[in-house]
Image (tube, rainbow, N blue to C red; front, side, top):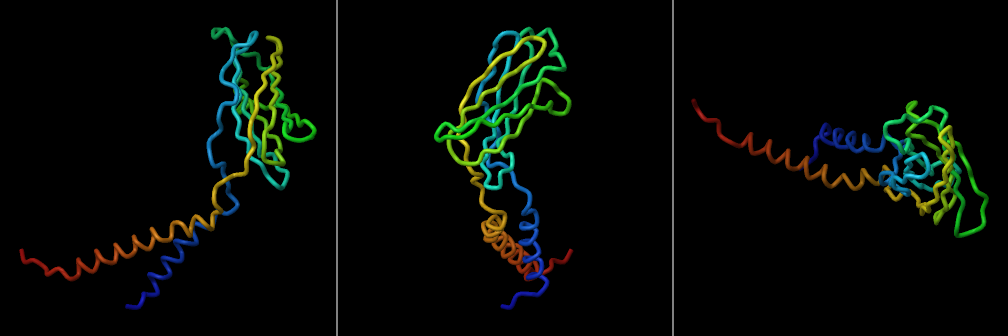
Length: 184
């Protein structure tokens, strides 16, 4: 039984489609809360983190600060901003600080990305400052490398399933052709 050139071309093309988005990467898991909503002073605030480590120095440690007035009937002043600082706790290293920016213009959701150059524990310090006053939040995160396999390996992992699907389809077509046509 020799494979048909068209079937081989379709199988190869399908495999190559899985390798095309090599530059696109995502975190292996969703962000998670490192500070659940706390009411401190005039604010109710929470901090979410996605602490990825990179070797190229890019800002992969992502932090979201969700802040609103403690009085739910009030609105958050538009000039309320947060500042996120991280520093390694397992070795000597300078603290890195970044001012947050509102996500899609929404001052209640603010974002900052910081480079995390090694795996391990980091102390996170967030300062929220605005017309309602200032508050401090502290937490810890463990930075890790993205644990997903490379996109090329994803194709290798999917290949057996694609081959079984092709064989199943071929079997169904062979059965259909071998079935005698019924007269109506």
